[in-house]
Image 1 (cartoon, rainbow, N blue to C red):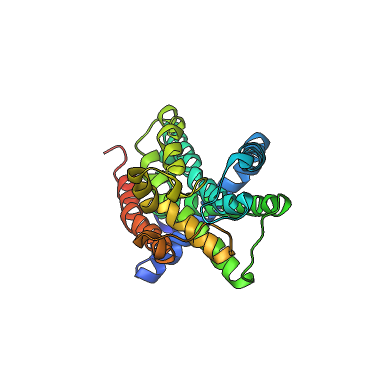
Image 2: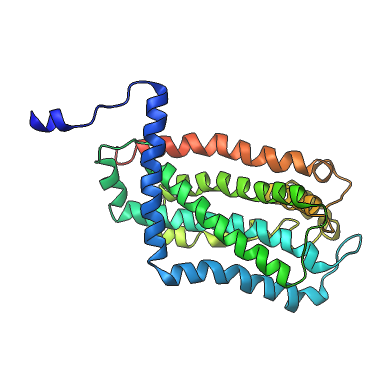
Length: 276
């Protein structure tokens, strides 16, 4: 009886439930961020990997690359690197979710008197904070190797927003898949993921690809974000004759919104049905 009297009252209205979920989600996000900062190897790996990729593609392979329509390859490359980094972040989400589930961390959270949405919301909040830091490091690296934006601060911030929107959408893919995989399977997810990031306009213009591959690359959701960012940054390589290339900005918004609308409720539903 005493425990029942001391237990907090459950929120009744939709607004109260939303406030409860956001507050609990942020609490879990802070614990995730503290855990991340106490693992220096993971922090170093997350920040150094994109830098190594920039140096590898920009200086080792860059001398042999051509940009359709002309232009500096490093200026063409960097928006693709930014988008690829946001896409590959889905692996981090999958591995953390799968590991937490396998070690019983998720079950402990589910046994606590917190919002059922808090765990997945907390993971998404923490991943977005990590993504902002990673993107900031990449932007600084891009400036060092000669990349820049040429259409003002406003369009550049809009491009950054599109990159983070893509990352936010893919977080829910990572949560959904991570809840279904073992840590070992999640760690191997880079094998199908890497071709998806390569079969796009990230490193090579689709105009230089064979016909069937060009179509796939142009309609890859990653390509829409990359092309829109190149346009907003004023970098070379964002044009094209196809419908997808001419409407890249709208697709860069539409694809992430569609992915979120599909996988966010699927992730919440799968989380609620764990161990049933």
